[in-house]
Length: 325
Image: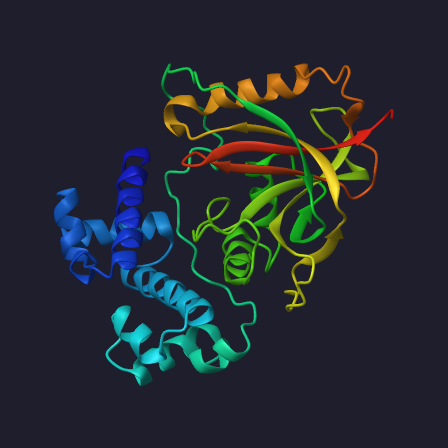
């Protein structure tokens, strides 16, 4: 099964790349099955077994997710967007858009409400499945460690007081109706104006979605020795006044000082464990002597932000406070 997860991961990567490039000739089951060396029937069966949906439905929903962002963020006409994403007419695009999102493209452009987008599936996500690295390569890239002041902003999120880590967080969330990974990540993906959005459309990556750990006296005792509650969400401008999905909370985070531990891009399969060990050790060993600062683990509501995307970085942003003048 692991080998087929790799194969289907290749398929979904090609789908996204081809949608972005508007290369519809690569977006057929026949073309993708040929690249894998299997029949359409067998590829379709494996795709459904791993993704939970047939290829046609996944492709349609991904195209509409990309199209929705163009409706939301660009000045392009609705017809031009419809044709770019393979729809034969304005009417066909409007029917498909409204059927999936409950609102027409024109109405959505005027009032972009949260909707559940089809985020990119990651069937070969070793981090999600709790698997470590499979190689022996050790990361040689040095960490960047620096203090930063982050301006006041808002955080839109779901939380789980019982979870312990990203994998366990989603295992528990998936048991809560309406708060499963696909729903929450799809809603967050549709939110306009995310501070960390780099144009991606998948969980915990370039779509501005991040894990956070909130100082919480009623939370679990974490590995760092203080009570916290795990959260997943997006950072938003302080002036954000958009709708808040019923499944989520929005809280204002005041301006504050933080200490950042940042590792650059790395090979997930080869280096994940060694990068994690390096960052964890750096945080545990950091010498605050002569800085006047220390970790802030007691102020209720302060957040540790955790950015994880092997193509970009592994980064913890930890709140600190000044202990002396």
